[in-house]
Picture 1 (cartoon, rainbow, N blue to C red):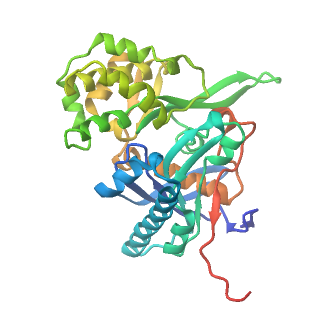
Picture 2: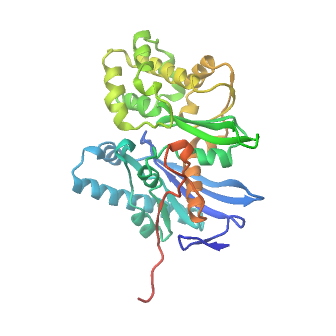
Length: 377
C-alpha cells in the first residue's frame, strides 16, 4: 500500500472496491456498478459484485436534455441538484446491499463537449455525491485531457486494453458508437510496439431513442420497428457523406453535432418512423463495417441488444466475429470502466491515453471530493 499524490492510501494488489456511475447521452437512466479491482502479477482483473440501473423521472430527463439552453443560475442549480440526486441514489444502493466501497467514480451527464474550444462539461456535483454518501468521490474525468488539446473522448479504451485485451476490437454502442483496438508498429529494436487507438464512429441510441420517444417509447425493442421499414437510399447516401466520416482520428462526437447535422437531415426526408429507423440502422452498420478490418469484436452498450442492428452489422462485415457478452457486461461496461478510471486515479496511474484522444501526453484525469469530516482545526 502506498500514499499517492491524492493523499489516498490504496493497494491495487489487495483490492480496490469502487462504485462506478454512468449516465449516457441517451439519457435512459443511471447505471450503478459496484466492482472490485485487483492487480495480479502486473495485470488488472475485475469482478462486478452488484450492478443496477435506475430510470430517470420525466422531469429529470427533461432538465438534463435541455440543460444547454438554461440560464447560468438554473444550470448551476441543476449541477448541484443532480449531484445530490446521484448521492442519494448511491447512499440507498450502499444501504440496500450493506456494502463498504472505498470511493465513488462518477462520469456525470455531458451537457457541452467542444474540445476544439478546449472545454467540456459533465454535470453532477462531486461534492454533492460525497456529502450525501459519506464516501469520497472522483469525477470530472475529461477536462484535463481537453485542456491538453485532447478530445476528452473516448476514455473507455484504457479499460478495453487492461480488462478486455483478448479481443481484436472493443465496440461500444451507447448514445454513440466508439471503437478501440491495438495498432502495431515496428520499434527501433525491430520489436512490435502496441499503441491503443480509438475514436467515435457514429451516433446510435442517441438518435434512435430520440425518435422512439416521440411516439411514447423509450427505445426500439430488438429493432423491430426498424426491421419493418425500408432503406431510403438517398438519405442513406446523404448520411454516409457527412464530413465527419472522412476525418481521421482522434475524433469524437457529441450532442451538438447531432442536433446541427443529423436531425435536420433525417427530418428533411419526411419518412415514416419505420423507414427512418431502418435507414439509420443501415447507416450505423455501414459506418461500423468501414472501421473494422476483421477479427474478434466485443459488443457492449444498449445497441448490442438491438437484434436487427447487429444483424445488419454482420451482413455488412462478414469478416468479423461479433461477441455479445453477458447482460452485466453489455449493460454496465461503461460504468465498470469509469470505476476503473477512478481506480487508476487513486493509484496515480494515467487513465487518459493521448494516443486515443490526441492530447499532448497521457494524463491522470479527475477531481477528488473528500467526504471525511475534520474534527479539529
